[in-house]
Length: 115
Image (cartoon, rainbow, N blue to C red; front, side, top):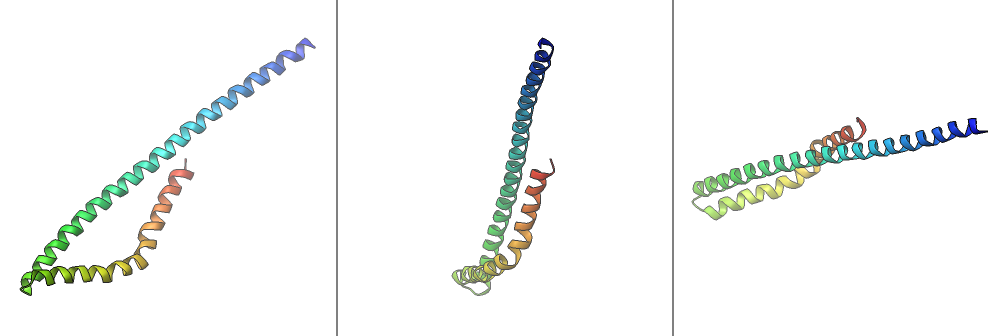
């Protein structure tokens, strides 16, 4: 009977070690996935902020240019604003699903499922 008791204890010890190592692995994997996701979000935010700054300065330049062409600065900025009011819904309807949702979904699914 003593001969059986020793292997059973070894099995129990090995099972506990296996569970501990699996928990450690899952914690490390979760950390890796979370960090990769945060890095992707930070990259997206940085690119968005640079794009926003570029559009802002180009809009100001276009407003000033159109204002000088029409001898009315306010009208130049109103035209640029009106252009944005026409373009933003069109871009949101057409481009956002193709250019934003699908690539982001692909990127995050690669981060989550490929590892």
